[in-house]
Length: 167
Image (cartoon, rainbow, N blue to C red; front, top):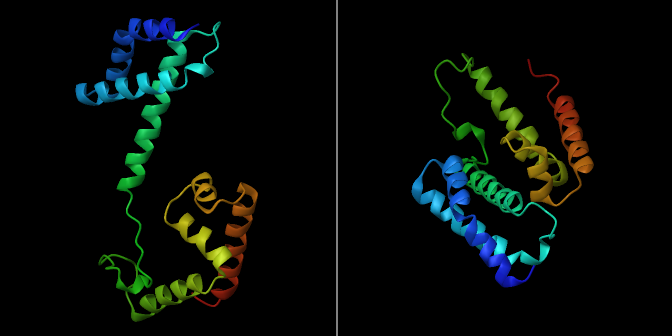
């Protein structure tokens, strides 16, 4: 398929693409943005299209993937990660379960133990505690998944050993 035929095909399914974009976004403006992004991406990747493949399905798959990636970016950007060095500065709710000064000391000890981990163990463990998924941590730290899981496991073991005397 040459470039002109490809462009004609993509223009011919714009209505279908818009309806699918509306279904995904439920917002006219966002749907138009998604439609434009998808059209540009399809045109940029025209050389990757195989002639015998379902053209409409191929383009709508691109659209779905762009939507999912954009959604993940929004969710990740709205995630707040506390970069405080000392958890002591966080305000605890009244019903935190720490009714005595001993409870506050326990938080300090746990925090100190986490910060005492080797950097290779501390970085993945801290990201894991912050709520990141294994694959996100592996990508962020550029390490294999098996290595990541092993480091988190070793961090847990080390922390259990350091904190075994805490009630």
